Image 1: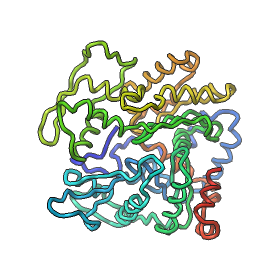
Image 2: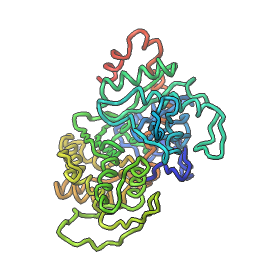
Image 3: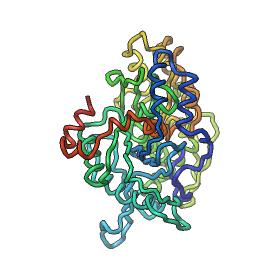
Image 4: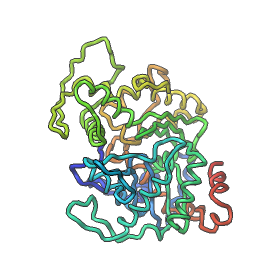
Length: 435
């Protein structure tokens, strides 16, 4: 798991391990491992890869990924944040707000907010501001010694756009996204794709169980033969942000986390040090693990002991973060139990982990153990897609899959055009998309 570090400029991730383009990867995966009853549809998909061009924007509550289709990874990754300067003695104004990467690289001097909380109360005006402020930078040649990116000369807005969305996205959010696309960005045409399906496509699969643990929510989505089983899907509002706050609570007697910068340091600490034990945490036993040291911005040295293991435990016991929602293992159990028995083994046998919060050491083994404790039968058939072990890809798998879909003629034929928007309006189109 890797966050945007205020001490280390970042844009696109520096990992150079993505040597195979997503299109080639799809061809290879489909030709080698697709299930027999989808061979005919797979063949038609491959025939339709026409080298079409589109901009792919994978929308996340913590960060967004953008780039042209056909690439092996997004060109830019920027945080979905707005920064308000810490003004002493004078009010902050709209003129000194910072957006996206600009806000994050000035994090020590900023109070930051994330407008895309995973809820029905998304601040679309603030998200629009982030996109409007960020795209012109990415569309121009901009070089500076302290910049997060060396921006390209690509004008993303002249191409069709592929947006991604989470499972069960509300009609209100769809409407707002469509209005942003056509009213503010003035795009020629758009497509909105489900993130779980895109992630599965990134591995060359059309059936499987996608477990997405993100910043603000965790989802379990069964997919069979390219069809999303919505009634069998589960979502809880527990994610990486909850674990950040939980870690701060665990460390409250050692350090006071007051500023946005302090809170982001808790995120870095979680991602560098925390891990998941193979079995349920035993509160009655003395913790015998090794402690780790972590230096805070004010040079305070923190000793992190049992907190390393207790923090991510909240994924499997949501009561630790004061929530009554079902824990992850119960979500998986419930989804697989609801799936028809004739396809259950096929779906459970292709479990794909997505999102930065799945990258804790020991995540896979603990999940299998917990599901096995609920059902030995399900525990035996739960297997992970091999490529999901390549943790560096988990935070961009949705973008890769959407990039693959952007190469298909069918995706472009089904796009919403500016004429569609003018004739039908955002509300009617969003209802059609929701059917």
